[in-house]
Length: 294
Ligand code: GDP
Image (cartoon, rainbow, N blue to C red; front, side, top):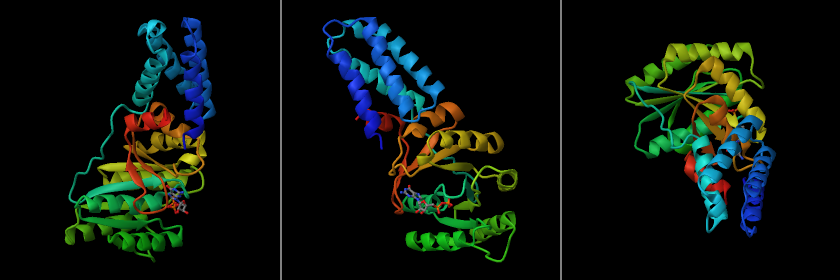
């Protein structure tokens, strides 16, 4: 995913390695190339500017100019700054309540339902008693899709195919979970093709009534800068707790992973890297920074 960005960063830093005597002009032009590489990878412009300004200050402040291996020192600084930009350390979900409720939101096609199955799989493997609630009432295929995924991972799926009231279904699911000794209910909700009032009202009402201990927003990394803009719009209405970035295995330039935290001020918690039920990773900013730097 980051091949293009990694190559460009490597090239930019190599120009510094090749210099006999390093001057702050060399550093400035290398940093400019790093900025261009980030913007080309779909990193938000303001974010790219801010982070590269910090990299430049740190590089000059930390004596890159007289370092024995200025390239290596610069790689370290870039890695530290990218890690910080993506949140510094990993951010865990809050699982609280009897049962704990995890609400899944996002646009249609973002990979919400697939992620719901994956998260159930992950939590089940950790020994949790999980149940899924099918509350995507507009897309009839979504209920079946969730049932298939539930079966695959061995987790019960609560659905009321005839009911068109998502809140009622979710409340019944929670009641059922309590009676059957489940500790976590993951609620899959309806998405639309674009952000609209009706969807926002519905998901906000679900959040208000169900009081989930964790609300996750799922977004497709392949949509680049749009992913960040959609996350911002959802967060303004929903005040979610964390972001899930999907399709990182696809043809994405990766910019959303780098900028989302800085723009939306909410942590990236999971990344999804395929259609299979185990293609899910907890997001670690430092590991991601290392991957970006190749
Ligand atoms: P929803 O409408 O948000 O519930 O989206 P779905 O879960 O139905 O996913 C939409 C499409 O994206 C499906 O074809 C999924 O198989 C696919 N998909 C979901 N997550 C990933 C992922 O991480 N990688 C890839 N390559 N495909 C994914």
